[in-house]
Amino acid sequence: MLDIKWIRENPQVLDSALAKRNAKPQAAAVLFADQKRRNHIAKVQETQKQRNAASREIGLAIAAGDNALAEELKVEVSNLKAWLAKAEDEERHLTGALEDILSSLPNIPLGDVPVGDNENYNVEIKKVGTPRVFDFTPKEHYELGEQLGGMDFERAGHISGTRFSVLSGELAHLERAIGQFMIDIHTREHGYREVSPPLLVRDDALYGTAQLPKFAKDLFQTTDGRWLIPTAEVPLTNLVRGEILDASVLPLRFTAFTPCFRSEAGSAGRDTRGMLRQHQFWKVEMVSITDADSALYELERMTQCAEEILERLQLPFRTIMLCTADLGFSARKTYDLEVWMPGQNNYREISSCSVCGDFQARRMNTRYRREGEKALQFAHTLNGSGTAVGRCLIAVMENYQQTDGRIVIPQVLQAYMGGLETIGVRS
Image (cartoon, rainbow, N blue to C red; front, side):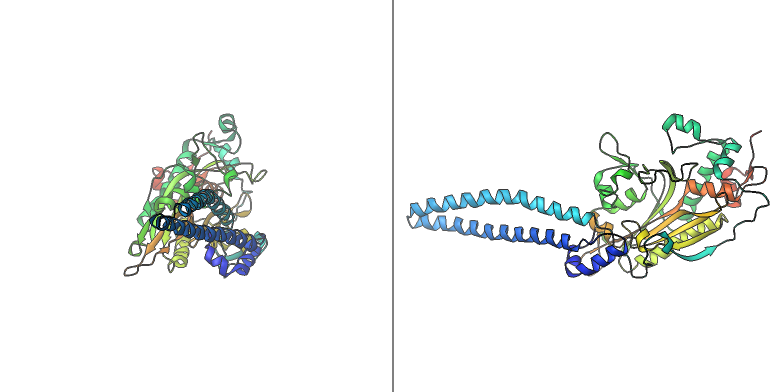
């Protein structure tokens, strides 16, 4: 959430930033709602003064023996109290109206984020690895998976419907191995603390990371009002919700290997075949909580942690800086990692690393205090995929496929596969 004080002082900057995101101007609406609330609060405070003054005068009137005046003042106090009781409800309504507008505003892009109307304005930062030249036409992962006998979309459809898959045998093992490899690297070498978080969360948790209220349609809600997590970013970031942190413990770095659940409400007709876009998938998530000064360094560091996973798997990829219109709602700056998919002859997103500034911390009321200072500051949060396990499985299958349909297992994963070097086609 954006700081209302900042908006009061920078309304034109807000509207300019929204325009870069292809969003309508909102400063006037915010300032109107804010002023209406402030005027009401000022009136409440003035009425409270009148009530207090009249209450004091009642005592003076009684002491002076002026019972008529005392009764008149009692009526006045009673009327003022009645108005104040109604005013409390009005203040809650006005506060809610302002918060509704503020919670609908996306974050402000940083100054070095490229301005653009769509993904065509994203900027390639670097490219790592050279796509393999095949002496045969490479297949897509779903063709390979079905040929291997370990990827079944028909049975998944019978069980759960579209956008689900059943992996079995060595492919199921390979998916698990990829996730374990990632979590081991991030915890043993990159300094992240492993967390096994809840997969069901309350409204407040999703509001804190800004999935609610705007993206409710993209989520799955249970019958008791809880929500299935769309990403482990939600529980990991909310580990510090409502806390005042000592600046000396920052940055805090968390990672988790969890399933994720998304309704994909806005992606009808996209990537309907295979595992690229599913309702349920595994992902290794990274979250950092930092002070204001360290956030941008942490973004570079986090992105490098995700890149190293792909480098060790020897998967060609490129790193992209997203333009203003392609940024996520909470992000101020984002790097996407896109891995080469030979079957599609294209790069596809496999990780997204974002710095959110104090946007989420304001919604969670997460603050920190520096040593020797009384003032509190809102923490800065970051999140990134380290990486999406299902898409990494797809990339390994397509990049390491052989002419006979076998999949060579990357060397760094072989220990996780019990020494297995290839996955063979079922005879």
